[in-house]
Amino acid sequence: MENIKQGSTVDLVNIAQKLLNTWGYYLPLNGIFDEMMYFAVIDFQKGHGLVPDGIIGPNTWTALGFTEGSTEIPAGVGVTASGNIPANEKTVDLLISPKIAAPIVTSKVTSVLRSGILYIAIAAIAVLYYMYENR
Image (cartoon, rainbow, N blue to C red; front, side, top):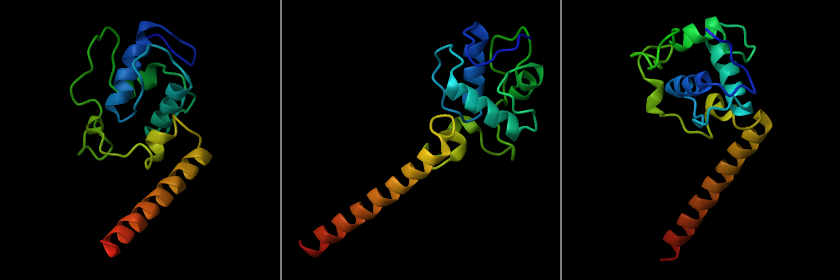
């Protein structure tokens, strides 16, 4: 199995993107191993006890559930560590889950986004309360 890494644009990148998406990552299917995909691979590797090097090699391909010569995503791929909830059901909010947000923004920006969402929620509650009191 060919190793792929950041900067790769081979057909295997599309397959890797599809597989990572079944594990709960939100990657565009563009065939480009970009920075967002790199961080998703690092996170996946950490979560599966692999060396987090950002390179999809034999061990990472195996953990993703892909074998050489395959052209389809195998059944059962994308089941979380607990084995209960398929990751492709995407029940986790993008801005709340560090697993999903990390490939997109740094942890500092994630904290700012979380704070911003909190302020928006508080403002919305205040507006609703004001509207309720002044009806």
